[in-house]
Image (cartoon, rainbow, N blue to C red; front, side):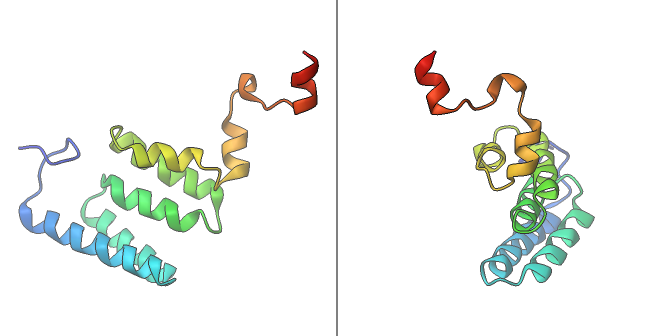
Length: 119
């Protein structure tokens, strides 16, 4: 039997625990308790190492202070659940300017408005 992420289902008990833990982590993050949120998410990943939502939430926390780590977490989440549009949006939002700008192909470099109008 496969779970919602395309992996083997590890049982309803652990899946339910992960959902509850993710909800707790989101509550901690919303209240500014980032350390508690992160430790809760790390416990989820300890039980379910491929859990994309846990990586996404870690990216949300890291975006505040470590953009490069945020990008890493968002990419990991996206690789584990390609169908989730919010993971793609997180990479493109610009919360991680240095890391995202460094990853852009050269053909996507922005041009100045004056250069575009003279072309």
